[in-house]
Image 1 (spheres, rainbow, N blue to C red):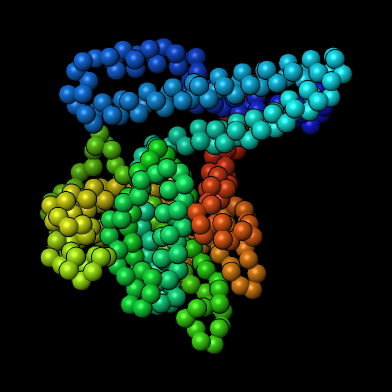
Image 2: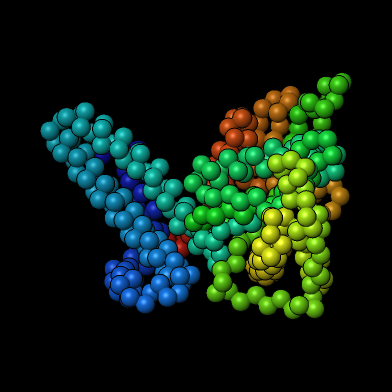
Length: 375
């Protein structure tokens, strides 16, 4: 076997070690039997929320086992093909098997990265907030571009996107928007996007065609599971209703149905502007609990906590990514130095490489060393 292929095989084996470690492969079959027994309980769906949670956990385990065993089998089969091809001096068989192993390396690396999304809330749905910075129309337009980018990204992932609230800009774009994004690992992927995003371009709103710099902030919070207890003292919140003006014409959402909840001790403000005031109260309260939960998670991570404390200050010191459209084309993440000249692709939602680089920066080094230490 050629040295290059041996190195690739070694990388795949490391990925397999991590995948086995993350799901505790030795006990996985026993845990799957327990899940199957619980699924057959005729009283399971008496509590639909618990039943859905159980079904999700079972499916996650099934997927983890199938992924691990599929990669392991494909690797073994292709190693055997290479050995057979070398014995029979059949270069075509060897080349095909080597190419298959290269493709398997990409798959294994992707699955390894997904396995690293094992934080306390990584598997949860998420709230995504976008706020325009200083700069008026420019920043409002940039905020709307970011909103489109994340909606496109979520749709490519097969996630469900619900607009919770939106405030339009005075001339163009949006001042702010809040979304709920539903799908497995939605928070785990998007949490790396929290921070300030900087755009440099020739302004379409400047008749002199000068280059402008705009800023918008993105903040991501996990949707809190019902089994996570978040206490909110009624005396700590103020609930206001106001007239919303949703998209769809002047006669849509014109009642005082929108809800704003202010958490007085922390200053956290959440809003929802659906048609039903009762629905808005429920949505806003869930969003508030998610924000408070995120605050608790932040306390456990000093770096994230410091970033959130700095987020609203003038100067936008917490920049995480720059999007340069003129005089050249480049998107660069300032934390990982990952960059691409495919600005159109990024603004159309091709964000996985940036998210993966940040995840790898935060956790893969530790996980690799743990895996190697186990061996």
